[in-house]
Image 1 (cartoon, rainbow over the protein chains, first blue to last red):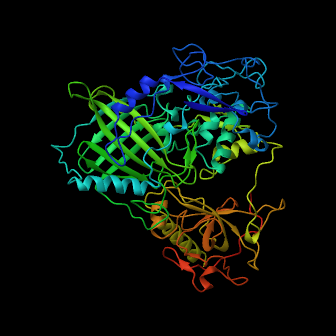
Image 2 (image 1 turned 90 degrees about the vertical axis):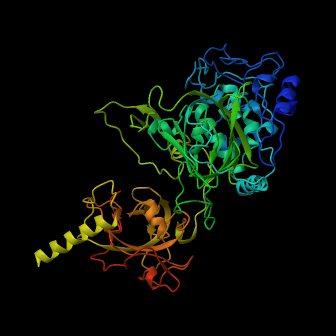
Image 3 (image 1 turned 135 degrees about the vertical axis):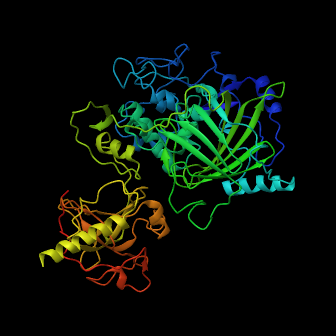
Length: 451
Length: 167
């Protein structure tokens, strides 16, 4: 049973047991650090009225509208809170309500992100934001399907265990260019809304918050407020700011993946507003003398630095030295974020390679209360030298923040521009300057020397 | 005399360009290399830009016990630009190495337009021991236990930095 907290009640959501068991059996774990069964598919979660799909609200392409009530109405059987994220005057003061799904009108993170029409039909109603739609309060995605099943506290321990396991079998496997698994090619990531919890559409926000530390809960709710209450999204890509590490795993980032394989370096190439490149250095070791493990100088990198090894057909990697950032609609992460990623081949019934399974375990003890896992499937589409070439994305700014709102500008137009502090949560700087007047934001304490 | 000043300025400009990175992504002509300030302050942030790392700092008063503030009571923050983040990190200049609150001394050639910023040029950069400011009127290179980051010493200032730069 999956459970969602609605006020003092805990609602249960049934999961199609047969499908869950089938999934579990298919993924029997034989390793200490990989191969756990895949997280259950959201499509096997069924709400009380028999509908599957995601929490909502939203109207995804090719689907019927997903909302429980709209335009000021309240779903039957739900008692709304006196005020919620659409009507609050200060979301910081509402911390006691953050863990109640009704505070968000049972919308998912993506439900809130799109409620003014970010990429779907708006469901904000005739008297925005008061008239915003409701999602389904009786649906949620199980938290236990999100957290890591492996029990390691750190990426270092996880990687070490996998490496030790591989060495015990005589590995790591050494390949030449001739014997290397031929994963060269272009892949399409399965990225429908229900494909992963990280796509933000299948879990209630209170469930999301249980994954985060108090500071990062505050940041997440701040982001949610500015999608819903103030309609002031600040997506990094809209300003050609860096896209950041997690963007490669987001629903609308990194959908097409190219792999370029050599024995000592593997490139994982993706695109969002900018090109997202992961360089996997086979057989190297991190310098662990600094704040976080790294390969190069003590400078955090937007996509981190990655080492890896082969265990037979499994490619196992560790990424560290990542610049803290945000992927819009998702959590913020710190410079402590590290990932263990396992790429394994997917084959059809005839043993023919058809794609790659990409399992990602994320460690960040500043942002997460425990490690979390994302599993993606990549389907091989074509060879590297087939079809349109991979595009190197150079983002050219065309939108600027005007009075705190992302605004496309035309050549010749004049805009007052406040230089953002890129390494100081620039999205939040805009929110706090333009859209939080009168709110009592927790302040940093003044330090020595009056600073 | 005039020729000597021009020559020195040209030499400083060339040095600045050489030091500030063969892969410089902007001209350095915005800096007035005929002027040199030497400043001691508290780091507010390091911007690890891959092209030119910047240290933002709030200058300390002559007594070295408070940062300078504007009319609104907010700290005045200067920026000093130098080599890219990777080269700087090899000299120990990084986000981790210079956290908020670090006390530094550096020389800089100020922006011609009077804003609160400058290029480090060939100046040395010194970090005081934690929570140990220099004596009044002194800089970090005078504090036992201070560390030097990159080549150079603190230069002779041509004048004092303005107490109220343009903003």
